[in-house]
Amino acid sequence: MQRPFIEMRNITKKFGGVEALKNVDFEVYQNEILALLGDNGAGKSTLIKILSGAEKKDSGDILIEQKKVELSNTRIARNFGIQTVYQDLALAESISAVKNIFLGKEILRHILFFRILNHSEMNIRSRKLLSSIGLQMGNLNEEVEVLSGGQRQAIAIARALALSVKLLILDEPTAAMGVHESAMILEVIKGLRNNEKISVVIISHNLDHVIKIADRAIILKNGERVGDARISKQNYNKILRMIVSGKA
Amino acid sequence: MSNIRIDVKIIKILFRSLIFRLLFIIVIISAGFTLLSPYFLTVSNIINVLRQISYTAIIGIGMTFIILSQNIDISVGSVVGFTSVVGALSMKIYHVPFQIALIIALIAATFCGLANGIFVTKLKIPSFIVTLATMSIVRGIAFGISGASAIFGLPELSKAVDFFGAGRISIIPVPIIIMFMLFIIAYLMLSYTRFGSYAYAIGSNEKATRLVGIKTDNYKILYFTMTGFLAGVAGFLMMCRMGVGQANTGLTWEFEVISAVVLGGTSLSGGRGNIWGTLMGAIIVGITRNGLNILSVDPQFQQVAIGLILLGAVAIDIATRRTLADRKF
Image 1: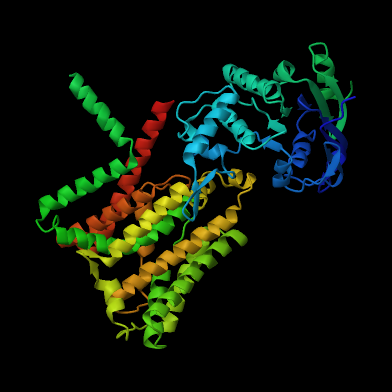
Image 2 (image 1 turned 90 degrees about the vertical axis):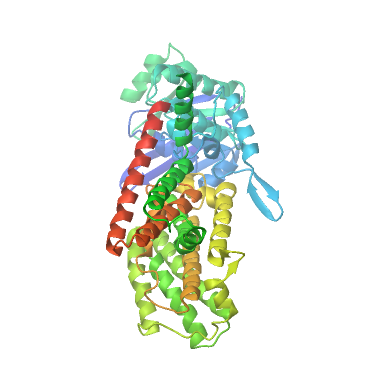
C-alpha cells in the first residue's frame, strides 16, 4: 500500500481561547491533487499555514517521506519542496512578471568581483516556466498590475515552480475569476500533476471546480477532520453533506 | 494625412517614456527662460545650475531608494548641517587632517541614517514621524556643538577643501562629477543588484517580499543608512564650497530633495521610480530657481513656483499613467 508523501498527525493549534485545529490528521500522496474542503472557520487556512511553515503547531507531528520534520518557518518548508500560492497571490504589483517569479531567488552572474542580476537568464527561464504550465505571454517585463487575474495566478504558480517543488499548495486558485480564466487555471493545475508530477493541495469553496480536477478530498469542520472521499460525481452529495453538517 | 497619423503615433510612443516627458518639461522651461533672458542659456550658467543642484541631487539618490521602499526621510537637511559642523569642527578645533575630518563627518552622517533606519524598522514607528523627530534632534545637536555660530577659517582651506569646493576637472566642477558618478552607481545598483531591486519589491508589496524570505527590515535600514551617508557627502561638499561649517546649512533642503524625487516620477506610495528621473527632477527645480533668480523674482515667489511645478508635473504624470493603463485594458 502506498505511504503518504506528507503526513500530519494529531495537529493541534489554538489562537487564544479558540481551538483552530483539534487533533487533525492530514495526508498527501505522491502525484495527487488533494482538495482541502470546509466552510469558513473550519481550520483549512491554519492547517495549510502550519504545513507551509507560516504558523507553528501547538502539538502533533509532521512527516515528509516518513521522516519527522519541524517546519518552523517558510524557508525550511521551501527547502522540503513545499511551496504555497496564497489567495492574494502575494505578488508585487509594480514590478514585472520576471522579477516576481524570481523574487528572493534571483539568478546571478559574476562580473569582476561583483554578483549582478542575470536578467536575460531569468527572462529565458520565466518563459520556459510559464510555457510548461501552458501560458504564453508577450512581454514579461510589463508590470504585473496590468495583467489579468488568470495571468497573475499563473505567474504566482510559476514563481512557486521556479524552485524545486514537490508539493504545491493553492489557496482559492480560481477565486474572483471568470469562466474562461478559471478553466485555464484548472488546466494548469491538472498539468502540474500530469506533466510535472507535482502533488497539489487546493483549498476551494467552489465544489464544481474541485470535482473537475481533484483526486481526493479531506473535509474539515470546526477544526476537526470529519471525513475524506475520492472525488467523483457520485460522491458529490456525500462531500457536500460533510462540509455542511460534518457527517458523511 | 497618413504622415500626420504616423507622427502622432510616434509622439504618443515617445510620451510613454517618463524620461522623455521630463526632458520635454526641461526643454519647455528652458525655452521660456531663454526667451525672457539672454543670460539663461549660456555654458557658464548651465554649469552653474548643475553645480547648484548637485548637492540636493546627491541626497536625492538616497531618497529615491527610501521613497521606492515606501518610506520617507525628512531629516536629510539637518544631517547636511550636522555634517558641515562636524567636518569644520574636526579641522578647526581638533586640527585633524582633511581626510580624517571627511571620514569623521561621513561616519556621523551615516550614523544618523542608521538611527533612522533602526527606529523605523525595530520600533515600527512611521518613517515620517521618526525623521521629523531626528530632523529636530540632529539640527539641535549641530547648533549645540557649534555654539550656533559659523565655523570660519578652516585651517585646511588648502588644496583639498578648495578642490572639492571650487575645483574643476576641465571645465566641470568637482561636485558635478561626483554627482554623475554617484548617479551611475545608483543606476547600476537599482538595475543589476538585489540591494536595488528589492527597493521596488518592498515598496510594491512588503508582505509578499517578506513571504519569499527577504529580510525587508535589513534592506530598509540599509537604505536609510545610505541616505544618511549621501547627506553627509552633500554636507561636506557644501562646507568645502562655502569654506564654513554652519548648523543651518541644508535648511529646507528636504523639500527640494523630495520634490526632485517625486517630480522625477518616483511614487510616494512606493514601488515605482527612476533614478535618472530624480536627476531630471533636480534639474527642473534647479533651472526654475536659476531662471527666476536671473529674472530677479523674489525668493518667496520662487518657492511658490517650485511648489506649483511639483503639483503640475505630478498631476500630468498621474493623468498620463492613468490614460496609458486604461488603454492596456
